[in-house]
Image (cartoon, rainbow, N blue to C red; front, top):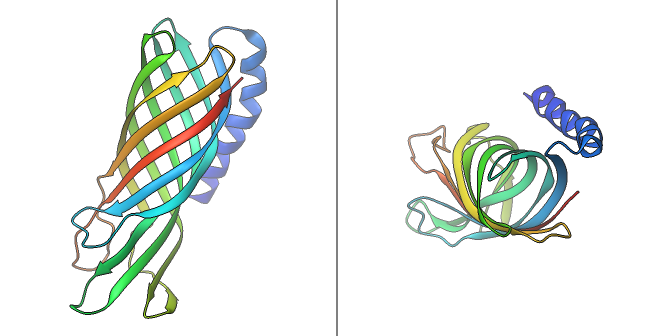
Length: 188
């Protein structure tokens, strides 16, 4: 699976210079921002984390497609599991998104599409003790939807919500990732 994500990242960076030169609707860029991540049905609070990565896109008049790869800090803070211990989950993912975009007017767009995440780190903290936590599924499939605005000079602002469709826990608990994201980017 790591080879798959490395191949996507290499495709984005190697293809982007070709696409940017031919002027036929292809472009590339980078984004960074903040996540407010939690688990569905959580008794805790959202984890504030970083998100950042790169993307390529292709636009045809009002429609477009965007393929991006992002490092994303997710999880949940203060989840009450056993009646008295509160756990903080720190889950770090490498997410690949394929978005379909529709331009409404003058740089304002809406988008939706699938997201496939690969868990690269998972820890759990309780009572001041941090431990590696392995009862989390390595793969996370989700759906991403949002809005954005791109200025003519390349500055891109976006906000989105991703709802996980894969149960996070390997054990008998049921919870899904739930992430609100705001980001700032630059399109070339």
